[in-house]
Length: 89
Figure 1 (cartoon, helix red, strand yellow):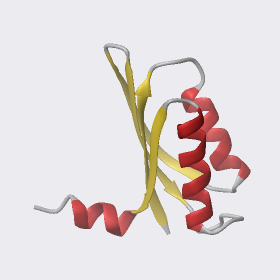
Figure 2 (cartoon, helix red, strand yellow):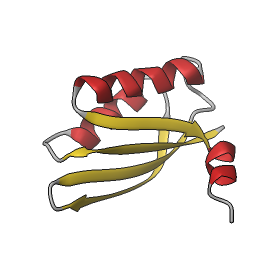
Figure 3 (spheres, rainbow, N blue to C red):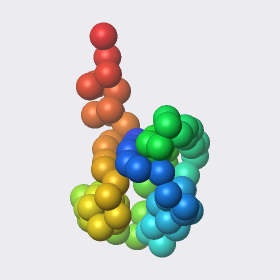
Figure 4 (tube, rainbow, N blue to C red):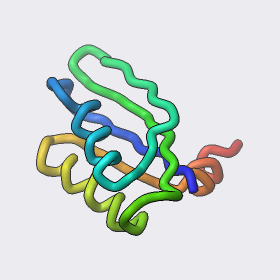
């Protein structure tokens, strides 16, 4: 299964590295990444393969969200099909 991970928050050193590390700890493979800095705001979207994850998707999503909460970021992980359905015209 593929998932979309979004990260938004005030720019600081190490956001990409920490989110990538959390993925690696759970054996989630990052397929694509796009990020930009809008003035002092960090915005990132990742496409990740969660099919080999060592934890279930809800636990993975909660782990990312907790890291975000602890660091002033908003991090969401959602199944690719849900993301596509939400963004279909």
